[in-house]
Length: 113
Length: 111
Image (tube, rainbow over all chains, first blue to last red; front, side, top):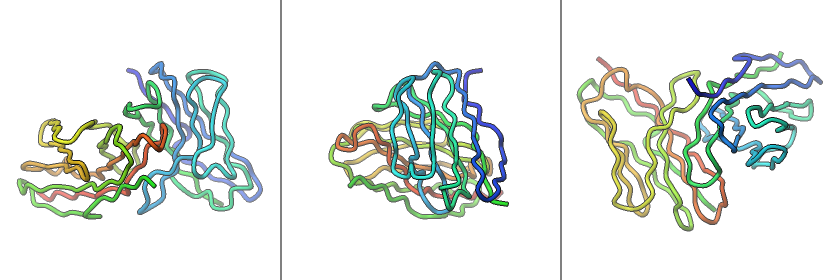
């Protein structure tokens, strides 16, 4: 079955530590996205990538970094510069960025130790 | 600025009690409006895309409709397994590719 796999499901970060969230898709989609979901708020876009080796900042990119070296993979690093990282992180993909529904993984919940 | 507002924040229904969820949006030219279902601890699952006013889509007990200012998700004779958070999202022409998500409506259906 095609889909998006996020790992780990739960992640804990210590002060001053960078952590990386994995996102892999086998849908052959060109576009991939990272969102942050906080209680009572809509999904907020962190980064997106329209094609391999290209990515752009979203609305809340500060303290995060990404790479897109392969079509299937779009890892997100939460750096120590992100002062409020506790949230539910969702990765999504779509055929392209215009007018296409996004398909989501099951998320990674990040907490601070 | 593109904006999406969903109401109510939460809705409690008895099994079989039909109702509607509202999604009001502000965009300068609508490319598409999307409905998703999200279960606790899971990612959103795509339900429908609507592109123009007057369009309707149906899936089992769910029916989505679209006007120039809002969309409704009608739930007919809901069952407990319909309990979830329903998210609305829009993509407009001026926002480029960006999809704006509402905060969602949490639906609880009691047996």
